[in-house]
Length: 217
Image (cartoon, rainbow, N blue to C red; front, side):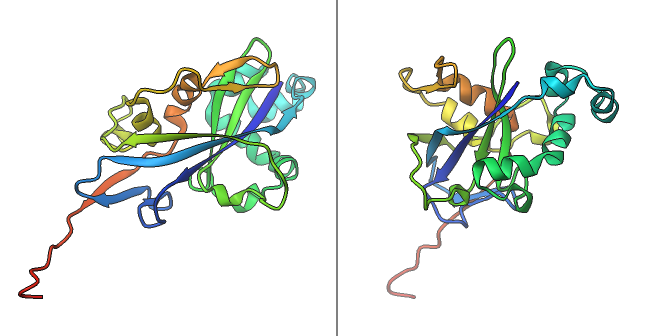
Protein backbone atom coordinates (compact mmCIF):
# COMPACT_ATOMS: atom_id res chain seq x y z
CA UNK A 1 0.00 0.00 0.00
CA UNK A 2 1.10 3.56 -0.69
CA UNK A 3 -0.06 6.21 1.75
CA UNK A 4 0.31 9.84 0.72
CA UNK A 5 0.72 12.41 3.49
CA UNK A 6 0.43 16.18 3.06
CA UNK A 7 2.99 18.65 4.39
CA UNK A 8 3.91 22.22 3.54
CA UNK A 9 6.78 24.64 4.02
CA UNK A 10 6.25 28.33 4.67
CA UNK A 11 9.28 30.57 4.27
CA UNK A 12 9.35 33.71 6.41
CA UNK A 13 10.47 35.96 3.58
CA UNK A 14 9.17 37.57 0.40
CA UNK A 15 8.79 35.84 -2.96
CA UNK A 16 11.96 37.49 -4.27
CA UNK A 17 14.10 35.74 -1.65
CA UNK A 18 13.13 32.12 -2.37
CA UNK A 19 12.34 31.46 -6.01
CA UNK A 20 11.63 27.83 -6.90
CA UNK A 21 10.91 28.75 -10.51
CA UNK A 22 14.47 29.96 -11.02
CA UNK A 23 15.84 27.71 -8.23
CA UNK A 24 17.53 30.64 -6.50
CA UNK A 25 17.87 32.04 -2.97
CA UNK A 26 18.64 35.77 -2.92
CA UNK A 27 19.78 37.18 0.44
CA UNK A 28 21.80 40.03 1.85
CA UNK A 29 25.48 39.15 2.06
CA UNK A 30 25.42 39.00 5.89
CA UNK A 31 22.33 36.75 6.26
CA UNK A 32 23.29 33.24 7.41
CA UNK A 33 19.93 31.66 8.26
CA UNK A 34 16.49 31.28 6.73
CA UNK A 35 13.48 31.06 9.05
CA UNK A 36 10.69 28.68 8.02
CA UNK A 37 7.78 26.58 9.25
CA UNK A 38 6.97 22.98 8.42
CA UNK A 39 3.29 22.08 8.75
CA UNK A 40 1.98 18.52 8.83
CA UNK A 41 -1.70 17.71 8.21
CA UNK A 42 -2.33 14.32 9.88
CA UNK A 43 -5.93 14.02 8.69
CA UNK A 44 -5.11 14.71 5.04
CA UNK A 45 -3.93 11.47 3.51
CA UNK A 46 -4.70 9.18 0.62
CA UNK A 47 -4.31 5.39 0.57
CA UNK A 48 -3.57 3.82 -2.76
CA UNK A 49 -4.41 0.09 -2.69
CA UNK A 50 -1.98 -0.65 -5.44
CA UNK A 51 -1.33 -4.29 -4.49
CA UNK A 52 -4.39 -5.46 -6.40
CA UNK A 53 -3.11 -4.09 -9.71
CA UNK A 54 0.66 -3.94 -9.37
CA UNK A 55 1.14 -7.57 -10.46
CA UNK A 56 -1.21 -7.32 -13.41
CA UNK A 57 0.25 -7.79 -16.89
CA UNK A 58 -0.89 -4.33 -17.92
CA UNK A 59 0.81 -2.65 -14.95
CA UNK A 60 4.06 -4.61 -15.38
CA UNK A 61 4.16 -3.86 -19.09
CA UNK A 62 3.53 -0.14 -18.58
CA UNK A 63 5.78 0.54 -15.58
CA UNK A 64 8.16 -2.44 -15.83
CA UNK A 65 7.94 -3.18 -12.09
CA UNK A 66 6.15 -5.94 -10.20
CA UNK A 67 6.35 -4.83 -6.54
CA UNK A 68 6.24 -1.73 -4.37
CA UNK A 69 9.95 -1.54 -3.62
CA UNK A 70 10.82 -1.67 -7.30
CA UNK A 71 8.36 1.14 -7.93
CA UNK A 72 9.98 3.24 -5.24
CA UNK A 73 13.60 2.46 -6.15
CA UNK A 74 13.06 3.81 -9.67
CA UNK A 75 11.86 7.32 -8.87
CA UNK A 76 11.26 8.27 -12.50
CA UNK A 77 8.83 5.35 -12.80
CA UNK A 78 7.11 6.42 -9.61
CA UNK A 79 6.68 9.97 -10.92
CA UNK A 80 5.14 8.52 -14.07
CA UNK A 81 2.68 6.53 -11.95
CA UNK A 82 1.89 9.70 -9.97
CA UNK A 83 1.18 11.69 -13.13
CA UNK A 84 -1.03 8.94 -14.53
CA UNK A 85 -3.20 8.91 -11.40
CA UNK A 86 -2.94 12.58 -10.44
CA UNK A 87 -6.71 13.16 -10.64
CA UNK A 88 -7.23 10.90 -7.62
CA UNK A 89 -4.85 12.95 -5.48
CA UNK A 90 -6.41 16.22 -6.59
CA UNK A 91 -9.79 15.02 -5.36
CA UNK A 92 -8.42 13.56 -2.11
CA UNK A 93 -6.53 16.70 -1.06
CA UNK A 94 -8.69 19.32 -2.81
CA UNK A 95 -5.57 20.60 -4.57
CA UNK A 96 -5.29 20.89 -8.36
CA UNK A 97 -1.97 19.10 -8.75
CA UNK A 98 -2.37 18.95 -12.52
CA UNK A 99 -2.08 22.76 -12.52
CA UNK A 100 1.04 22.70 -10.35
CA UNK A 101 4.63 22.03 -11.31
CA UNK A 102 6.57 19.28 -9.59
CA UNK A 103 9.69 20.52 -7.76
CA UNK A 104 8.52 24.09 -8.16
CA UNK A 105 5.14 24.14 -6.40
CA UNK A 106 5.53 20.85 -4.56
CA UNK A 107 7.84 17.84 -4.13
CA UNK A 108 7.22 14.12 -3.65
CA UNK A 109 9.30 12.49 -0.93
CA UNK A 110 9.49 8.92 0.47
CA UNK A 111 9.29 9.81 4.16
CA UNK A 112 8.97 6.34 5.72
CA UNK A 113 8.82 2.67 4.77
CA UNK A 114 7.38 -0.28 6.70
CA UNK A 115 7.16 -3.93 5.63
CA UNK A 116 4.02 -3.34 3.58
CA UNK A 117 3.45 0.43 3.45
CA UNK A 118 5.26 3.20 1.59
CA UNK A 119 4.61 6.63 3.10
CA UNK A 120 5.06 9.30 0.46
CA UNK A 121 5.10 12.92 1.56
CA UNK A 122 3.53 15.53 -0.70
CA UNK A 123 5.46 18.61 0.39
CA UNK A 124 3.92 21.87 -0.78
CA UNK A 125 6.56 24.52 -1.37
CA UNK A 126 3.78 27.08 -1.54
CA UNK A 127 1.46 26.61 1.46
CA UNK A 128 -1.18 28.86 -0.13
CA UNK A 129 -2.20 25.92 -2.33
CA UNK A 130 -4.12 24.48 0.65
CA UNK A 131 -7.81 25.26 0.87
CA UNK A 132 -8.02 27.39 4.01
CA UNK A 133 -11.82 27.61 3.92
CA UNK A 134 -12.09 24.34 5.82
CA UNK A 135 -10.97 23.58 9.34
CA UNK A 136 -7.89 21.41 9.03
CA UNK A 137 -5.98 20.07 12.00
CA UNK A 138 -2.26 20.63 11.67
CA UNK A 139 1.03 20.38 13.49
CA UNK A 140 3.62 23.09 12.93
CA UNK A 141 7.35 23.11 13.54
CA UNK A 142 9.63 26.15 13.29
CA UNK A 143 13.23 25.96 12.10
CA UNK A 144 16.28 27.97 11.24
CA UNK A 145 17.94 26.71 8.09
CA UNK A 146 21.63 27.51 7.75
CA UNK A 147 22.37 29.11 4.39
CA UNK A 148 25.38 27.08 3.46
CA UNK A 149 26.54 25.32 0.30
CA UNK A 150 25.34 21.73 0.23
CA UNK A 151 27.95 19.15 -0.76
CA UNK A 152 26.59 15.96 -2.32
CA UNK A 153 27.71 13.10 -4.54
CA UNK A 154 25.64 14.27 -7.49
CA UNK A 155 27.82 16.79 -9.34
CA UNK A 156 24.74 18.44 -10.83
CA UNK A 157 23.70 19.57 -7.35
CA UNK A 158 27.20 20.32 -6.07
CA UNK A 159 27.56 23.62 -4.21
CA UNK A 160 23.83 24.28 -4.09
CA UNK A 161 21.74 25.33 -1.10
CA UNK A 162 19.32 22.74 0.26
CA UNK A 163 17.08 24.10 3.02
CA UNK A 164 16.51 20.62 4.48
CA UNK A 165 20.26 20.19 4.84
CA UNK A 166 20.36 23.65 6.40
CA UNK A 167 17.85 22.51 9.04
CA UNK A 168 19.77 19.31 9.74
CA UNK A 169 22.92 21.35 10.36
CA UNK A 170 21.16 22.74 13.43
CA UNK A 171 20.16 20.74 16.49
CA UNK A 172 16.56 19.49 16.20
CA UNK A 173 14.33 18.85 19.21
CA UNK A 174 14.21 15.05 19.54
CA UNK A 175 10.71 15.27 21.02
CA UNK A 176 9.29 16.41 17.67
CA UNK A 177 7.59 13.42 16.03
CA UNK A 178 5.15 12.56 13.28
CA UNK A 179 2.27 10.22 14.06
CA UNK A 180 1.38 8.08 11.03
CA UNK A 181 -1.79 5.99 10.52
CA UNK A 182 -0.25 3.13 12.44
CA UNK A 183 0.09 5.47 15.43
CA UNK A 184 3.79 4.83 15.18
CA UNK A 185 5.73 7.90 16.24
CA UNK A 186 8.48 8.78 13.78
CA UNK A 187 11.16 11.29 14.85
CA UNK A 188 11.00 14.42 12.73
CA UNK A 189 14.74 14.15 12.18
CA UNK A 190 14.17 10.92 10.19
CA UNK A 191 11.48 12.51 8.06
CA UNK A 192 13.77 15.40 7.15
CA UNK A 193 16.73 13.12 6.50
CA UNK A 194 14.64 11.00 4.11
CA UNK A 195 13.50 14.17 2.34
CA UNK A 196 16.98 15.56 1.79
CA UNK A 197 17.67 14.39 -1.76
CA UNK A 198 14.13 14.98 -3.05
CA UNK A 199 13.92 18.71 -2.36
CA UNK A 200 14.98 21.24 -5.04
CA UNK A 201 18.44 22.71 -4.53
CA UNK A 202 18.87 26.45 -4.90
CA UNK A 203 21.66 28.67 -6.12
CA UNK A 204 22.71 31.16 -3.44
CA UNK A 205 22.83 34.77 -4.62
CA UNK A 206 24.27 37.16 -2.04
CA UNK A 207 23.59 40.85 -2.55
CA UNK A 208 25.56 43.63 -0.92
CA UNK A 209 23.58 46.68 0.08
CA UNK A 210 24.93 49.97 -1.17
CA UNK A 211 25.22 52.32 1.82
CA UNK A 212 24.63 55.89 0.76
CA UNK A 213 26.61 58.76 2.21
CA UNK A 214 24.03 61.14 3.77
CA UNK A 215 26.24 64.07 2.79
CA UNK A 216 26.41 62.88 -0.81
CA UNK A 217 23.07 61.15 -1.70
